[in-house]
Length: 98
Image (cartoon, rainbow, N blue to C red; front, top):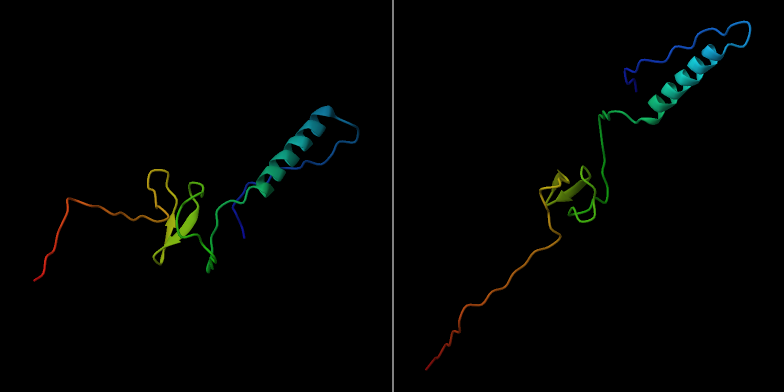
């Protein structure tokens, strides 16, 4: 996949050793290696995600998870708890049947 990167220039070497040329060569290789190690943007025609977690517990910001059939992205300010339930009690109720 093309990533529209500006490739570094590798000039023809001089007849004799030149420190400036060698420094430029090392710099060009450094730029090239940095470009190759950067994954860049992802563009896909199809994508299959298997075994996605059902909540954001333990995931880093930007990770994907699924909840109730929807793929969601972990955001730092929007928690999706693993499970929530609650019980409550107010007063006492007595039922008498006769």
